[in-house]
Length: 288
Image (cartoon, rainbow, N blue to C red; front, side, top):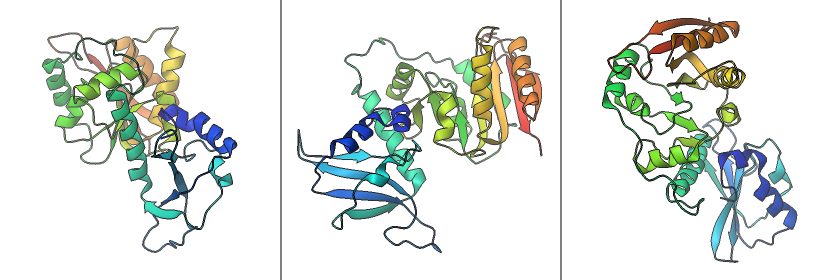
């Protein structure tokens, strides 16, 4: 890929530079969205997701360019060649491929000179057991789930035990990297990204549920940021959002914010013997 992160797929700095350079390419592959059975699959039908260019310098390789998530339409100016091969792919599979490539590149330390993290991520089985007991009767069976601010993926193991293959997001690349190295996260669905930018990759109501475990700590200073993160993430949920916190005060603040945005919300106590993780829960349900 030309870009090195999901955030760069929005601003496409390298892609723009390549397009402006007038790069001479002998061979290319155009990647188009796969159409439905009743739709026209002519060569120019549908949405062009990206273009792969065959380069010979500094080494022979294929370089993928995509403007799909930038909204810029930059590739519209890319000259089409009658000799270009055209392939069709479902957009979801295309995106999973991008996410997986970036995740594997991160895990293999392609984007950093050395790893500053010396120990594996923390894992507390008691926390997973308590979350599983709480979430099992709440989360709808089947469907897709998004976990925001997943950190090192400890709580993600609960979702896996419940039968989900969640999309996961965190802004901290080191946390995601360590979670990948420990196999806590699926590289096809592990995203290093600001949660407020998730709507550039997923439409509203895309997920059955959006969850976030131990959001915060929330105080008067950082609450505007957390409010923006939680409300924008919640727009991606079709039916339910679940956010756990350390304190009752935090859970009530989150619940009131959801109510002001049109959700039905309730605060639920979830104490355990540890007294550390997920002690309070905000459960929001979309009003019908």
